[in-house]
Image (cartoon, rainbow, N blue to C red; front, side, top):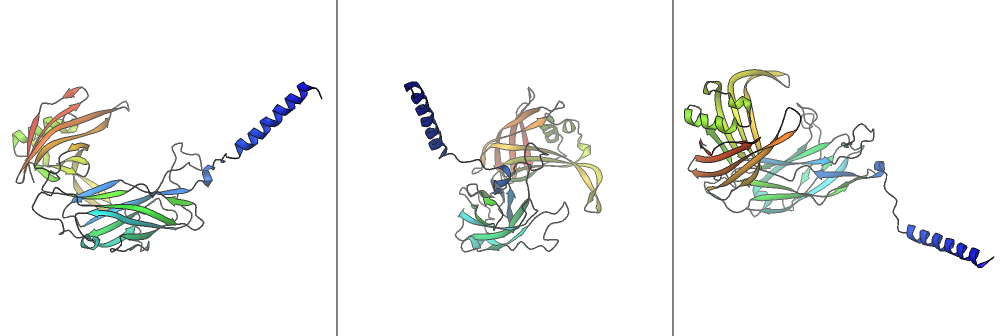
Length: 343
């Protein structure tokens, strides 16, 4: 063998050895069908007023690759067997013991728009220890989401003063007993429930429909983003309610015109409503006056979306809310308009 052939063979052998060593650290990818299912907390948080007597959190399966290939965006694929999910209250503020606030707990899932598992006497075997804050619940096969609901003491926080300190509970998933089902829980995300102070801006207020000036100010302000509101007269309106909720501003215009709806087999006559909603971007919640800003996107006729935004301030005097806002939408804007609202 000449020197040239010897050199070529040596280089080939070295390359093969190097490739073999390199592949020692390579991990073969997990095929989609073998990747474990993931159970998540469905929401990051929620909140209700001081005198609310319950709150809940939801556990859901994460989207995954559609095994049937019908959806490119993925979808929830229910479990084949029931698993046991463990969760716990990891922290709380504003009270000394969980048992002071949480009185009872139950769990259920929605079967259809009219029935839950509770209605069908399906037991998810929920357990919850108010001393340790730990609990567990069945996540059944064939189900996409379950809800755990806590019954709470509505009198614990219901006072007549403005509270500036946090009153909240944080919940996380801790583990799952899955047997041979390929499923894990997301232990990183959390759900935080906040008690909202109804002496602050949170809560529901009314526009005096019989006050022509106030009615017209409301129409000028929100007619900017809603043609139906823009064309309303006071004679058509039963009441107008404005509400600051957890993370959301909402205005509901209840019309005198009625319609019939089928509510789980029972036909009811109800007033028609127009709703305006916006996600809160800024809100002073620990003072009787401060800043407010909320916004959202509205779909246009061509399928595109445009953002509307309302920005201004508020002042609370007794049961009266003075709300001053300026609206911006589609290159148009309103002047600063002040609404005087009553709780």
